[in-house]
Image (cartoon, rainbow, N blue to C red; front, side, top):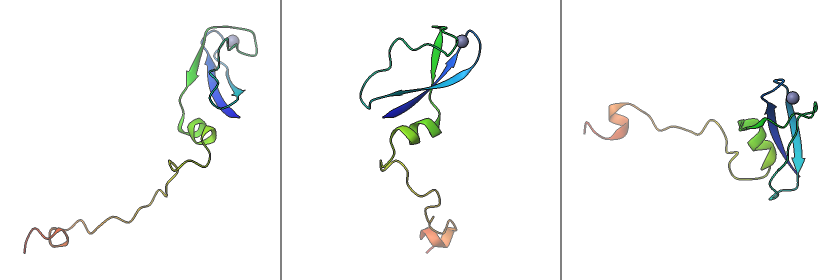
Length: 75
Ligand SMILES: [Zn+2]
């Protein structure tokens, strides 16, 4: 299952819709039955929807020494 976050433009509430992966969520309504809803593309939702994908790489990748000599441009 994939979770999609939506926001209702009518009442402003945010809610979550769960659909099987690969199935487009159509005819989405807010808990108050409003139809004017917008999909929220938040990183949290994406990470939750695609758990196990290689997109979730470690945040702190080692960065090479940024100094001039470190880059070999002053030799
Ligand atoms: Zn609503």
